[in-house]
Image 1 (tube, rainbow, N blue to C red):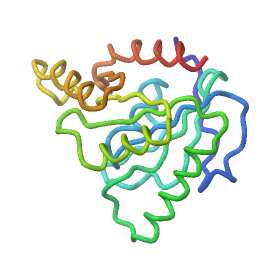
Image 2: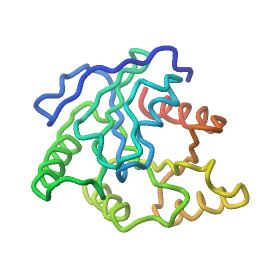
Image 3: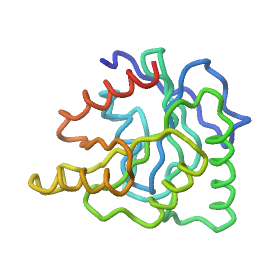
Length: 190
């Protein structure tokens, strides 16, 4: 699949504020600062489409993006470290659970994991929650350009073993993996 057009649509705090575009949706999940917004920018070939930051916890809303007038990507707040109160974190969790469980157009979840490190406890908890709720998901191993080349395939294989899901390597620098991911998305959601 070739992305010819991508645009930001809206931000919403919760499911009731999310307009229904009658297009299949893909939701991006992952720890704060794992590279979800960078993924959007890379596949859109637009470095400013989704806001990125070096500080964890900058994405605080459900941000919806339209790709090729064919599907929607929802960039969700990251789980894990963010300098916000427990009350705010609990509200995020409630809003995200509602979105993930009740969004009718949601077809696929992509869980992002930093390939430079062992899978984290909160990544495993999210995986268990997805499995428990029967939600279809894949894994994208981010920041592979910062992983030793000799370790990339081993890291991907280890993530496949642990998560028992399809795993794709991803890099904002080395874009050769994008076609594999986009082809998979086209096959699965369109």
